[in-house]
Image (cartoon, rainbow, N blue to C red; front, top):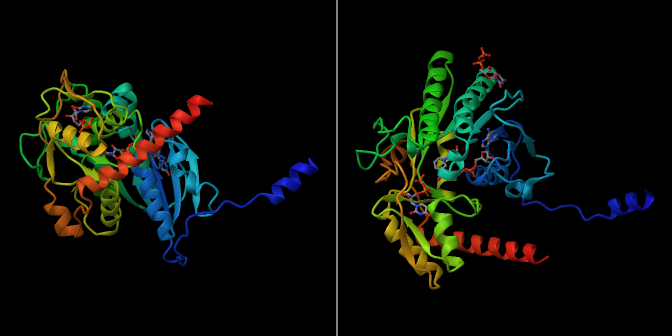
Length: 343
Ligand code: NAD
Ligand code: UDP
Ligand code: UDP
């Protein structure tokens, strides 16, 4: 035991990124549900660097401790393993509610759980915000527009969603989440924010996430075939993670309470996107077409006039620049995998 104590004393203390100093009036206690996930962990970084106290609540369904490893042990940071479907009693000033699987294979894996997380989970978050009189931001999605028949999609569009299809657990879950938010806001006079997030990519996306960005990059890096679902004429608009995080924090801090689209309006067909990634990564992958997926939205592009007007926000990161960073991240992840499988 003595030896152990001596070795503990000699241990080199962990070093952290330098955080800004805020006095007690400026510093907020901020809860991020789903903070160990892709988007959440980048938001953690931003708010920690600004000097706030950050509490992450996550059940690690799709998130990883590794995503917030850089802050474990920091005096301003706390990580709580908790499923938001169950009530949560803590004290905070502000809440970002991000807990929910986000990629189609993940949210379809356990559709009932996805619905519970977005309904019961959101009720618990709103109940918590109500008790504390805390401002709350809900992460909604472009999926509330379903397979849209209006293009591009403004926030005033009510959507075109199949209520019983394979995507319903997520789409309708998020729609109820929004309805709950505005019902609470009206009934309980609460301060709410709703971000309708469009396709976002960047480092820390889950390797087996199944979304198009991670799939195509991993396939290109491993010289596998690049699998386009269906014709590939369907479109998406891709936003880099740092743009989204900037938008989320700006939305929380502004005084606009209606839903706001956060996305990059530059639209590509999935075929174009496959070629862009193949060219960027290099290698000899062949682009092939496999069967289309059910209820796949055919066109998606945000109308961001509202974000420009009320938040003075628009995306800054160019697709090639963002993709280069993401490719580099996956390259390193693959190296780590090879190293651990050899041991
Ligand atoms: P992600 O899967 O990486 O992160 C979600 C996090 O929530 C994970 O850490 C997961 O473990 C946690 N979680 C899931 N269910 C939970 C529960 N019941 N209790 C506690 N924690 C739970 O996904 P992401 O891409 O970071 O998405 C974050 C949020 O943004 C989600 O609400 C998602 O719907 C929304 N969103 C993301 C995108 C995108 O392109 N990434 C687009 C639209 C909306
Ligand atoms: N809740 C919570 N933490 C709190 C307050 C409430 O998790 O600090 C949950 C609790 O489970 C409750 C739900 O939020 O059922 C909704 O709370 P609300 O006050 O709106 O309604 P209640 O059901 O308590 O009347
Ligand atoms: N997609 C594809 N190949 C893949 C994964 C996805 O062609 O390996 C297509 C998918 O059919 C959809 C688009 O890419 O049209 C975006 O899919 P993703 O799952 O990334 O997000 P979402 O459909 O939720 O926008």
